[in-house]
Amino acid sequence: MATSPTLLGPVEVRESADIYPSPLPRQYSFLAKPPINQRINIRHPAYEPGSDLLFTLYAWDHSKGGLQYGLVHNACAVVAANRRDGYLSKARDGGRIHASRTDILGAGDYLKII
Image (cartoon, rainbow, N blue to C red; front, side):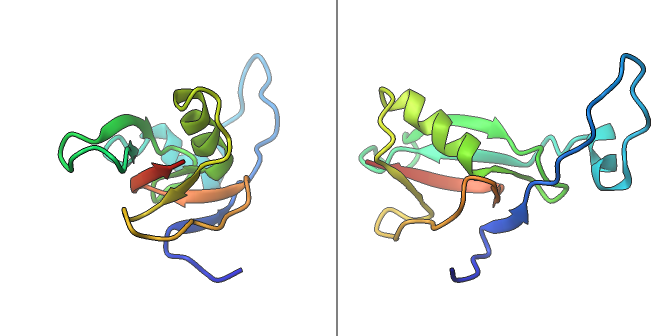
């Protein structure tokens, strides 16, 4: 699989929390103050630019702003009447983003293509 500037790597799973949670591990220290301005915007390719935003998700799975690809794809499927045959793209005439469900999708604008 080719390297993509959109993908930030795999998800790092944390230990389960106790009723009294331990301090955040170093790789999760950014969650003490999450990246509020880092979001993933899902747009519809058939709508006019500027009026094409379907929904936005906060990108809190990575310190640089990102979400697990599988979560983003599932959210898109729900909005598209549970259609899972679509894919994500960075541009209206762009190709499919090839990623595993556990890869981290970087913050930014994406189009859901069905």
